[in-house]
Image 1 (cartoon, helix red, strand yellow):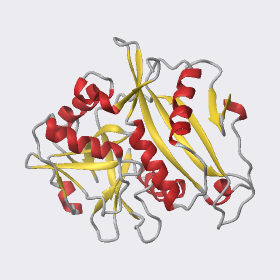
Image 2 (image 1 turned 180 degrees about the horizontal axis):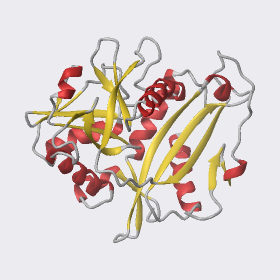
Image 3 (image 1 turned 45 degrees about the vertical axis):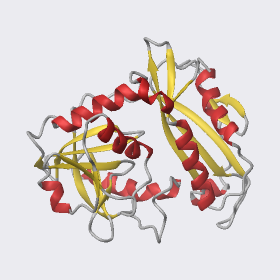
Image 4 (image 1 turned 90 degrees about the vertical axis):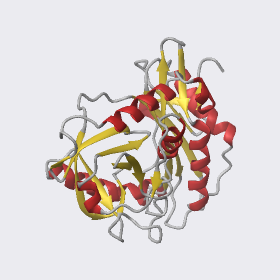
Length: 305
C-alpha cells in the first residue's frame, strides 16, 4: 500500500489521520454502527486485485442497517464505489482486509436512527507462521438473538467476543469458542466454526446464535461442489469438540484457520491441520485468487473494471 493511506469517509477520500467522527456521536457513545469485513486478493499472474463476494457483503450490510433501523440514503452503487475507490486510490497490489462501516453520526442518543455516515478502510493482510491455533471454550455465553441479534454485524455485538478473547489470552490460548445459552457450540469471536467427525464436516445452524457468515456459506458450497462432501448443519455439543477429528474457524478476517487443540486436548497430532481442513483451505484460496474460473462470479476486479 502507498505511504499516504486514504480512507473513504462520507463521500470523500481523505488521509487516514483525518478520518474522524465526533466523540458524542451515537456510534462512539453506544456502539451505534454496523459493518462488513471483506477481503481483496492480489493475483500476480492476472495483475489483478479481486474483491471477494462484494455483492453478498453489501446485501448483509443493508440487512444490518435495516435491523438497526438506520435511516439512510446509501445506495448499492455508492457502497461498491467506496470499496473500489479506496483500493484504487491506495494503489493496492497485495492481499488486504477491508472494513466498511455505516455509523450513526452526529450528537445522538440511544434512540437515534440517523444521520448515517459511511467509512471504508483497507489494511494489509496479517501473516501468520502458525500451522494451527489453540483455543479454549469460554466461560462467557454467546449473545442470543433475543438480546443482541448476532446474525448481523453490529459493532456492539463484538464486546461479547472481546470478553471471550481476553479470557482466552489470559488462560494461554490463541483463541476461544463460545457456547450459546443452550450449551451448544455457537462460534468463535469473529469467526464461524466447522467440526469434522467421521469424515463429515459439521457446522452449527444459523439459528445457533451465529453470524450469517458469507465465508461459511461459501464453504458449504465448496464442500459439495469441489470436495464431494455433504456438510451437515446441526447443533454441536461441547464434548463433540473434544472427540472431533478436525476443527477449523472461518471468516473474512480469519479465512480458514485450523485448530490444533481445544482446552488443551489435541486434535489429530496436535500440531498440523487435518486433511479435510487442508483440502478446503487450498480450495478456498484458489477460489478467492481467481484460479478457479467457475467461481469468477464471486470476484469483483478492481483494475479491470
